[in-house]
Image (cartoon, rainbow, N blue to C red; front, side, top):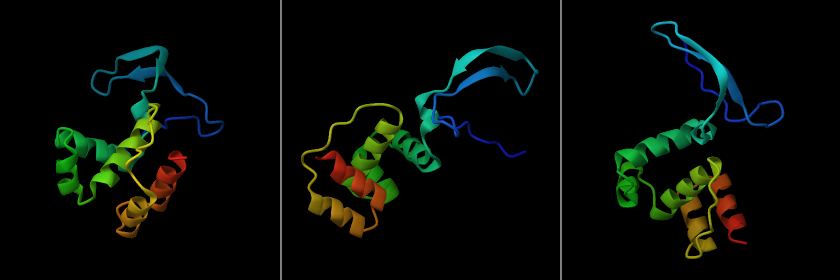
Amino acid sequence: MKKHSIPGDCPVCGGELKIDSISCTECDMKMTGTFYISGFSKLNEKQLNFVTSFIKCRGSIKEMEKELGISYPTVKSRLDDIAKAIGLAVEPDPEKGNAEVLESLDKGELSIEEAVNIIKNKR
């Protein structure tokens, strides 16, 4: 049986989702009530894989560069995207210039969306 992830927000209106009941796959125990979804449920598969690698590397950005074959600014950018996705405020990095962003984009280290977000957030 294929497992499906819980969406982070309502697919109809974008509102916050809650779970009304949960059950155990082993003993069939059931609980009802109001259970809210964590911010990490809002991460997509790529972001979850990144977080897994980050934990594996014990938070070392240098190790992440080696593990994923991406640059320091790209690691920082992806961390910022994840922080925003789970509801944390992120200040733009004043040291990251547009030329550096475009260079990371050209190398394939950033997606177009990531590059646009970095440049927009600097304003």
